[in-house]
Image 1 (spheres, rainbow, N blue to C red):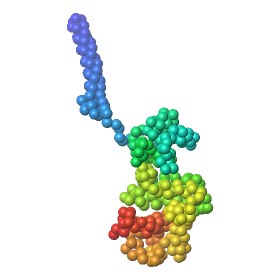
Image 2 (cartoon, rainbow, N blue to C red):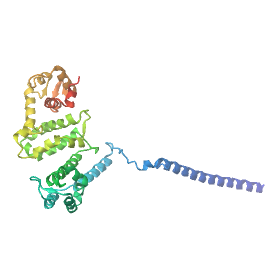
Image 3 (tube, helix red, strand yellow):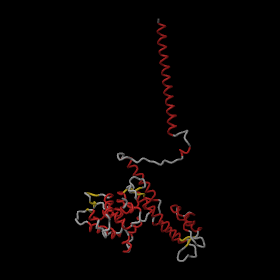
Length: 352
């Protein structure tokens, strides 16, 4: 009887030990399978090798409640833009480059322009420093090579090319600082902030009162968005801003000796903004700060058709059927149509 009991308990113990061993083996097997399938899903041992070379093209933007990620993104972009800014030539380095080019000019002169040969061009590139290396390439030289019988290029043309490149990079960095999303676009509010902070640096706008800044910014921003955002997406590519002439016209106001004729033809000048503002005030007969269709119909020689006016008021922000003064969107678009009635954007307004 005792032997039976002993055998009985020993069998139970063996079975438990066997079960425990099987559990450990099963757990190890599960871990092995998990690791295998996870590795295949994550890295893809059976995937095509091209997957390892294709760069990541989508980065999820932080949500509004992810404050820490937003701050991290802003700081990283600021550091990146600062680094890019330090890579650009400053005024002292540009002046040094001009002295080197002038020192290595190769006679004879072409008219009144100093010229430089390819050999001297390469020597200047070696002496100018690492920041200038990107400008001293055979491709750049070939772009500027025209009909010189000695195969030289104009020093002035090359220096202007460098200046233009540096300006474009500086401006792109400046605009990117206002790109809140970091996607290479500027929203309307972003561009408004950029122009508002740019006003004090433009001597031709010194006479504007601060109370007029909001209207001026609105007229300037609408010029960009009317022509560069034909689909009305509410954002413009920074590259498109740099490629068009509008920014050049705006920054032309830095010239303290800008002629009266140039100011009259420049949409961003103070006289132009004041002229638009005066026209608006003259149309606002009841002085309520808004324009009704009847008031707007008197614009110019009163040739605006009812269909056109209906279309304008469909597109623009209104209050009780009258155009809101604060935005001035429709009014400014209408003026742009009058100034450039051959553009696609102008034609879009007239579509029924």
